[in-house]
Length: 95
Image (cartoon, rainbow, N blue to C red; front, side):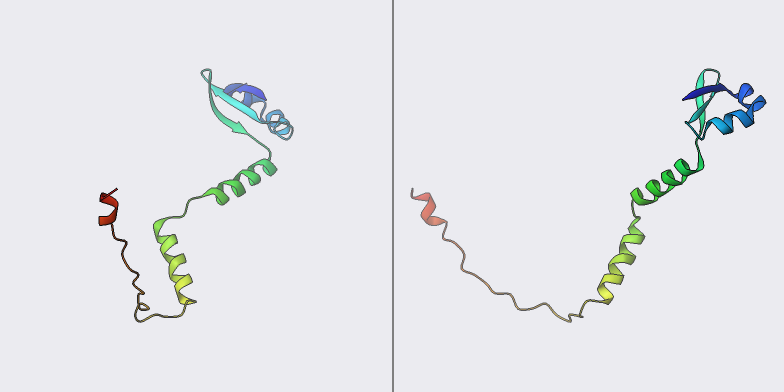
């Protein structure tokens, strides 16, 4: 990875661009990295990665849920509940 001062990169822009095909070119301003030039293929891969890892907003999740519900059969009321006997906890105290 080649490091360039901004003034140097400005003067030799064509060279910086041609080098970014091989490896990222980092631009520095007052000894701090401020930008990186990468080739277009790497940039497109980055955009795909960013798109695939984007978290959905609450609105997007609700839209997705509505879409799922469109395909589910409608239920006007809940099915009857089958009660089961409650365990007798009084027997546990005697032990």
